[in-house]
Image (cartoon, rainbow, N blue to C red; front, side, top):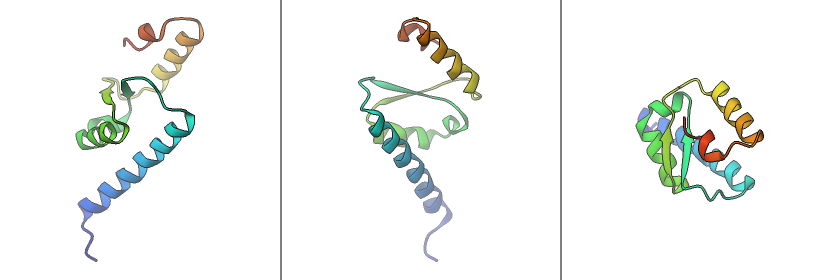
Length: 90
């Protein structure tokens, strides 16, 4: 009864972030100095701040919000031998 909507929403975002962090941790700690993010969550400034704090990295939000096809294209570029720097320069 004492939890307000704002605190509840924040805890849901925290849960999502800790889930992402756990996945990233199990995949191996990346040496990248930034994380490129896309999708609907990028419009929420507080969520981006939370990501930066938890991961300890700079967050770059893609301008494009529907990034599924863009991500597949970037993975294909890297798979075909393009340098990662070029693939991420969108």
